[in-house]
Length: 325
Image 1 (tube, one colour):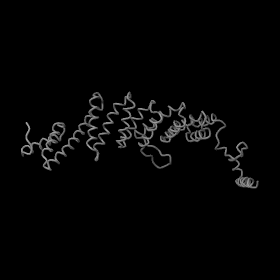
Image 2: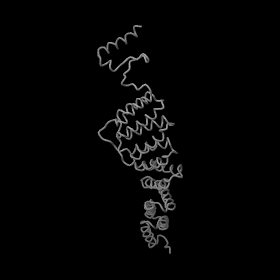
Image 3: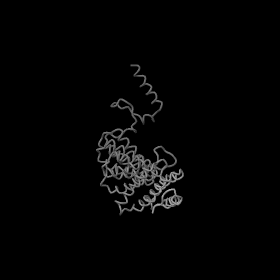
Image 4: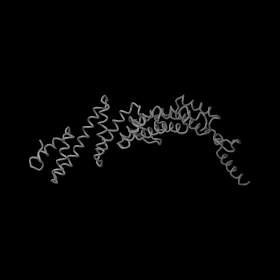
């Protein structure tokens, strides 16, 4: 008994010492059997709390509205009003120019309340935020710091979330395509290539398929031009560009595709020329001849073809290989 009385006695002494100010913030509730601070408590019903939060939103006081919406979802998480409060949390953060925090609010709505009437709205707003970040809008971090920072990686996170949660909704193909473009901007060509492949494979009727095919070839090209990638990667990129050019003659991307194909063919011819020159220096004339003739035959449209003709002519005149008419 003494153990129970002692804490209550200490609490009484503390409150007495604090004076009337303490009694203004803490009250004893027989229902809960504890002291509570009325300022931290929600209204008696989730509907009352929602209306109270909405009043601050309508008065354009988003900071106070955020506190009241959070209070609702924390105290009444299973109520019918909770998804609405969660959605307006995102709206408040957008109004305060905090796009990533807004996305986090929409993400929570989508994950916790997937059957809410606000599900589609949350996906739409998330996509809009992802688009803004893709286009270069900077994001303000959750913790206060002096400056904002570029957030293309956040765009990747948002588009991945949309593809995961609503792959066949209104924004499924768009988010998948933007995911590829975001990764491409970041220089992550291998991952971008996979993203564009998914657009082609899973969204066959999407108007974005044509652009996805071009971007697929472009990523393969960028990968093949990097040191360490073999000629097989270049061959694949060439094949994709040739397919794109053949099947999309009316595309606005055709000139770019043709320039990329020409660059790849030159790169490929230069690789073959290096092999031919190696054999020539080793005095393996027949092998060198085969590679020079391959350039002349298959890559006659590249600058390297003229050099191959010169080398081959020198070898013929020196009697290293038989001249061909």
